[in-house]
Length: 385
Image (cartoon, rainbow, N blue to C red; front, side, top):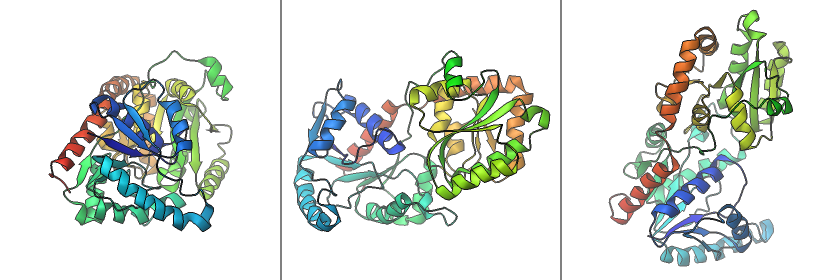
């Protein structure tokens, strides 16, 4: 089976890139002698090869032109040329998989599969970003023209059917996973000091972006309502990269208004290798999001032996199972009580650590690739469309 992955845009970090990288690596190992093909440009192919230098069974089709190579004036011409190129490429491939819902090119070919990572752009309360505006435009096209839609959880599958009933029959759940580098490691005191943390001070850790749906203002309030004698022994650490400027401002305002400046630390630009140590050093990972397509930090923390507190809604119970404390993300007291439980019950913390290790083992990129491959086979057999 010849499988093509669209990868015009390359980023060294980010959820969509991680998904594409890990899925394609695993898919190359199980796809047979044909292997997989990155559908890209000559320039981007050079960068992609740096990530797959030791991987066999990965090929590169560099026929496509970059959409912005002639600027905005020349964009219509590039789209026209690429549409013709897509028709030629699609005849050479059994399946073409678009993994980036934001930068989906909206080409009309008969054998494409797409991944929709979440549908938060359709929530009325969501603070829309440019990326989510693009997703909101692209999803209806995907629903109408794709042969199969991969989603990372049954929650997203249900949401897709709710917003787009016409998607019934083509939705395929393929759980995601995280990298094996997330694992228990000895406490690295020097690394903690490097990032402004006293190794003797315990901390609650949040990992993710700063958007409204991440529910960080309630998390800050929950930390502020811990008993004073407990709060003074802990810090609240955010490892957050991307985000809304207004939400970042509100986070800092909340920290200041609740007099938490000395107990709060916001870190950015953290490499995955450093993040592993920060998970290992944390007292717990708190992930009280209002909605997630999957929630990778839950698994990352579990693989590192870090107990997890997360939301009792959306996809998070589906990912966490019984290996985390589930809280009501709309209720500050519920989030606080979850934190208190871990502090006051050492046995519970130890139990969740053990359960977390076992739960995380149920997810792997090999399983993701195998389930995705089954979806491809179903398309080729005409069982979904």
